[in-house]
Length: 368
Image (cartoon, rainbow, N blue to C red; front, side, top):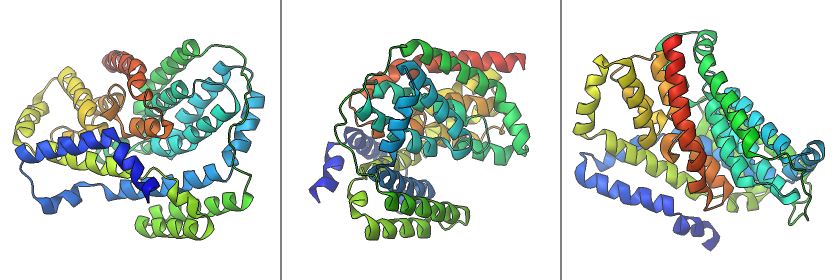
């Protein structure tokens, strides 16, 4: 029980969100009965299922085996980093940004046990990569799903609309990674701890993953989560006790804080004029709002005042860079790293990337 409670007691970010929520409750109009409805339970259920499945694959030893094969194939730190960045970006275009991170980040953490690599820096670039890659397609991230549904565009038309920005940002990110990771040879080190290879657990995770995906498609997410949890309860209970459950509390607190924030009449008064604002004003406002309430809630809020245009789509996706709350994918990646220093190091790369993405994005929009 203590192992389950310890993450909640040590999570400073969760404590900050709870304090922020308490302050907002004092100044924003709300009803306690409406707070549970403010939480996107589909996201919470999906995240919980993915956390269990990823932890199961990790404890099966699958990432150890795959990591050893990767280390043998890549000669330098730069090659390995570029491969992981590309993998994160490409997976995010069709598997969504959070699913891509649940695949790539645990693999990266396993590689740390096999060779000396700057794992925190690689995870930072993976978080940036999924933000850049997921903006390409309508299903790459939640805000694109919302915008695609409102825009009336076909899958191909929406992808073509986003392609210039996605291509430019991903090339920029690869160039940055080229200079940030040296071409020094990978140095093998003693394998500190490895899980024995357990094919039975791998096949169990694969079967549960398929069940969970089908349940999500059939709008039976809660039943799918129950099947996954029951499967691990029978097959490997240690999976359930090894998960950082406080991450779910962080997401729920964020949803409630955003709900309280957007319910403030003063904020709605500020956003109403955006319907007649210039392109530059809308572009800057969408990016700025995303920095503080995340780009998905910002998209939901702004769609009440402006149409689902290409400019809005570009702006809220660019808003995923910069500050940590800009994208929930940032939070997922950094939490999985389990490194306190990564929180401020992330901003050394993400803030310049935000400035560059904003300048590049608006420039491309003007010439398109």
